Image (cartoon, rainbow, N blue to C red; front, side, top):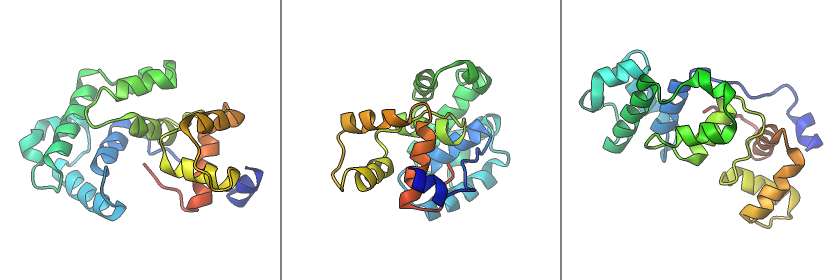
Amino acid sequence: MAELVERYAGLSLVSRGDPFGTLARSIVGQQISVKAADAVWARFSAQVGEVSPDCVLGLGEVGLVGCGLSKRKIEYLCDLAGHFSSGRLDPPAWTSLDDEAVIAELTEVRGIGRWTAEMFLIFNQMRPDVFPLDDIGLQRAVSERYLAGEKPSRRTLAAFGERWRPWRSVATWYLWRSLDPLPVEY
């Protein structure tokens, strides 16, 4: 790990800041290439104007048709907007919640699973100790750097991550850099 920290000195995580926008962008980008996601995001944000819960709800599902989103993703974005608008998702309250409690709230939104919630905690909330066990990049990096190419079981990966507690998000970020030196933004 020390070699990775030295190699990528000067780079670090940067939060996008807006929780709704970050989660909306995550939904838009699910299961499509980065290039396609950028194109759909551009059309979506042009259609809604301001990317906010109120603007999404104001357009509704019918108003989002035609910007390149599947029917399912439109449903997910409207559900996300409804959670924010109703206060069921309340970002200021998350400062008093632990990671698992925030994950539980986020996964109540249709289209947001544990992995998306963990990426949100790392890249938006800047939580220092998230270790996304289901992340293929993390699994591959640990395999290549520490296990001579052997794929770790979930239990092995979890046990392995304990060495970096309480900074597992940071360790994960550096392990991702070992596979791809360009940081991805979520």
